[in-house]
Length: 99
Image 1 (cartoon, one colour):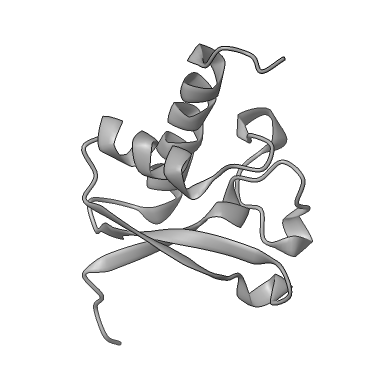
Image 2 (cartoon, rainbow, N blue to C red):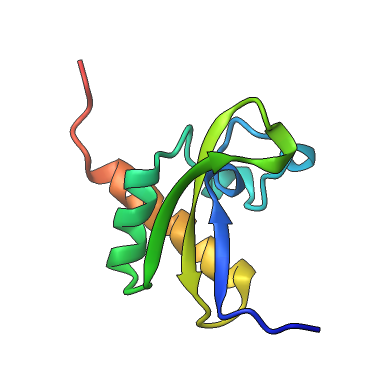
C-alpha cells in the first residue's frame, strides 16, 4: 500500500449541518456551522500545520461547492481533524457577532 505524505481534511468533516452519512467525522458538540476555507486555514496555522487550501466539490455531495486543506502528515488523521475542529470553535467564539 502506498504511503502518502499529506492528509486531506474536507470542510464537510467539521460541518454541523452534515449528517454522519453525508461525511461528517466529528461529533456535533465539536462541529461548527458552515465552516469556511479561510477559517480552517487560520485554525491550521494556529496549530502549526503545513496546510494548503483548495476549493473543490466534496465527492459525497458533488453539487455543493466545498473545499479542503492538504496537511503534511503529523499523526493520526482523526486526532488532527478533532484538533482543527476544537480550534475552529475557539476562532468562532472569539469573533465579534455580526449584526
